[in-house]
Amino acid sequence: MRLSRLLTALALAATAASALAQTTLKLGHPQSSTSAFQTGAQAFADEFAKLTNNRYKISVFPSGALGGEREMVESVQLGTLDLVVTSTGPVGNFVPETLITDIPFLFRDYDHARKTLDGPIGQDLLAKFPSKGIVALAWAENGFRHLTNSKRAVNTPEDMKGLKLRTMENQVHMTAFRALGASPAPMAFTELFTALQQGTVDGQENPIPVITSSKFGQVQKNLSLTGHVYSPALILASMQMVNGLSAADKKALQDAAKFGAQAMRKRVNEVESSGVAELKAMGVNVVTDVDKSKFQAALAPAYAEYAKRFGEANIQRIRDVK
Image 1: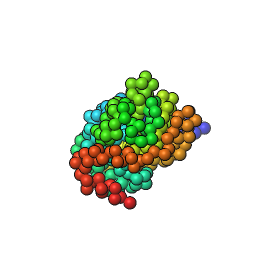
Image 2 (image 1 turned 60 degrees about the horizontal axis):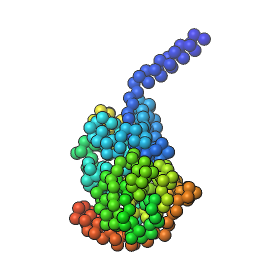
Image 3 (image 1 turned 45 degrees about the vertical axis):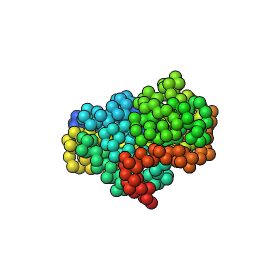
Image 4 (image 1 turned 45 degrees about the horizontal axis):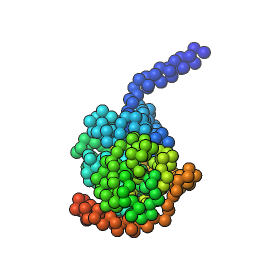
């Protein structure tokens, strides 16, 4: 009996010591607790705890609880926030080269996009972050972006004329929508639902998993499956935090981030196949037969601007990935 009590006491002491030694890191992201962002963030957190024998805990804060995307990226850069999962939209303000991924109709499909980002091109882009005081751990995923609005069905570029559309704070996206005749209105994602509800903007564009998890079907009448932009996501870390880790823990952080990114991609795959049916059931009018060639033709002025900005050879390098 005494031995049993002694062993129990030792176990409790070990648990208490482990808890005291545990370091908590904060991770923020802008989307809801049912989103693919949350799935990826939580998988990342769980895997990092596992790989470090629970010496580290990542607390996940969804729904912009720690600020908008740009604000959180700035906090990571300053070292006041440890980690963020973010779309690439605001990241271009910190690492402009990443904006090449936001060129409309650049990626053929998910396989093409993922191979590009997981290969040399994507890794070269991640290597540009440390000079900005940020560590880019992994490419994750938002998905192909589609258009919703409360005014009318959009079948062709002509249907977009005059629509006031919320966009990310992303000059590549804004250039494209101006070329299509829409009026882009950059706005933090955390403000978007209310803006749609109140009619401050007519519509927005996001991947299906974002549209469903954010319940935009409640405030938008029309969805057009334009698939106009593949939207990656990034798992970013504070350089100050990363520099404080041992070599083994740095590797664990990187491996856990890649694990989270894969979980995020898997979740996007799942919702892509079910989300459109869910929106139809909510009464959203879904336009499936969008003539993408007409949109690409209307974007000719924008493509000329992108070639000057990023270099035609760099754009072609992405198109050539098999």
